Amino acid sequence: MSYWPHLMAAMVGAGLTVQVGMNATVRFAIGSPVLAAIVNFVVGLAALILVAVASGSRWVPGSTATVPAWAWFGGVLGAVYVASTTVLGPRLGAAALLALTLSGQMLAALVIDHYGIIGFPQSTITPSRLLGAALLVAGVLLIMRR
Image (cartoon, rainbow, N blue to C red; front, top):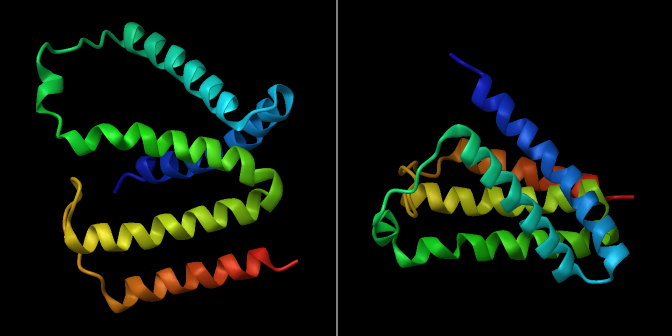
């Protein structure tokens, strides 16, 4: 079994924590969480354009017509995440913020997997999965204790 996807997911998660601090720094410098989020997305767009050009990616004409309308709102959720964490990170601290967002992700993931919606395969909620989520929430509570 290859563990590369697992390692990559952990590295991306670590990057999210670092990103919150970077975005908060931009927010404090320019005075607006919304403008800080815009800076984040503009820089990210520029980086993605460079990667797309370097990798030879090509846009297939007409391919956007096959995307369901609801799927286009993923960008809105990304913007809400970036803007929100830019404000909440300095207030909650990195550990509490990421523990809370991870808990929200885990609970949503359990429901999404259980019903097999928005492109994910169906995976029924089991007692062991519920226990894992409960332990995660307990961990969040422990992390938030000062």
